[in-house]
Length: 163
Image 1: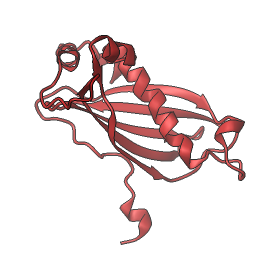
Image 2: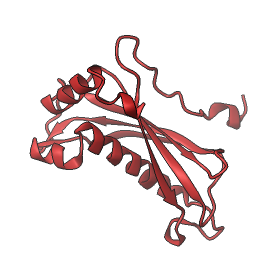
Image 3: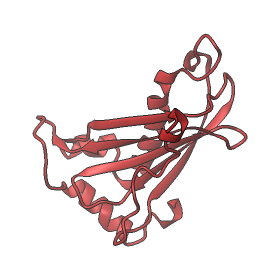
């Protein structure tokens, strides 16, 4: 097995057979000077920031923004972060960051990401897993009302235009 064949091009999470399709957003971003390394390509440490932009947009649209979490005394720290790199975007290039939130019944949020270059080539793919804790750091094993409300809206088709 080669190193290239071990890297995934998405498909980290399976769509649920009994739940709705993943919710998807697209965010445009230009690779700024402060995002690039000395070789004028997107520095590897910025990929998390780019993924986070899609994460925040999903949250805003689905009632899971950071302000919503804070209002409900919740936090959702990232407990897993993964990225596979394929073709580095260059300084000044506009990229599209795609985020897809996958349905699950657990007390977690699963999101896959893609970064697409101007020619639609896959620059990177990856995922995050977030778990729920109270604002005092107590781990929640049951889904809080905030995510249950999101799931109810999702199951009722409110996010169908985002898929």
